[in-house]
Amino acid sequence: MSAEILFLDGATSADQHVADMGGGSLVAYTAPAPDKSSENEDSVAAIPYGPNAVVLIVADGAGGLPAGRRASRTAIQSLEQSLSSARGETMLLRTAILNGIEAANQAVLSLVNGSATTLTVVTVEGLSSRSYQIGDSEAMLVGQRGRVRYQTMAHSPTGFAVEAGFLDERAALHHEERHLVSNFIGTTDMRIDVGAERTLHARDTVLLASDGLTDNLHSEEIKEFIRKGPMITAIESMISLARRRMTVETLHQPSKPDDLSVILFRKPFRKNG
Image (cartoon, rainbow, N blue to C red):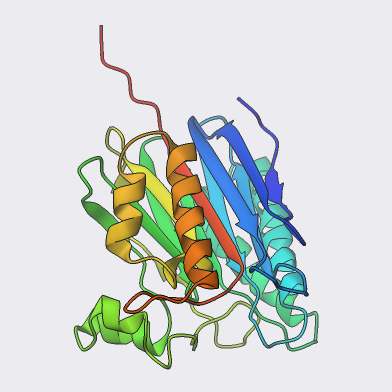
């Protein structure tokens, strides 16, 4: 098992990595939007926290703001430094994450350039998982039969409308305010949406993704891709469909060119005897 930190760059081209970490296996991918002249503003990382725990992270630097890429990288680097210190103090992982996110927020604020980033974190510790959400990058936990055991809510006007039942999830993908985000790392009013602890079951798959995926694929499509079969096949199929939709608009299907980042994680489960 690797004890090294996984950080994907993907500045100007696709970057994909497969690793064993935190007592499980993961596939991570990031790439800039098709035909984009500027650098990828997404950042992706997996950070071990002891032999049987891992911290999975996707950050999406805010488009249209200065230095979005710097903001996403700074947030992850600050969180990693905080976790490194917490490991030395044998701090509880939940406490370490909350302290680390606060430190990341202050680090991006300290850039003093108006930049900001989303930050979605999922911790896996033994068979327990928990999500921490700032912004509209999302996390899902999907069972083998396609049941979504949890899904984070996008911190956006359309995300809140879907959660409240005022807007259908499919309609939200085509909404004119889909691009608006109401919560960022790098702001004085940043808030952390902490999910409930969930126990991982056999063949559960954890997904984290930037809106390059979730603005181009429906949730039903995502869960069908990842609920079974090899993770490498699932991630390649999702990326292929998302990038096709980014470049070719089709009636009744979403199409939003954007940087795209995904992490898939599974624990191995063995039968007794």
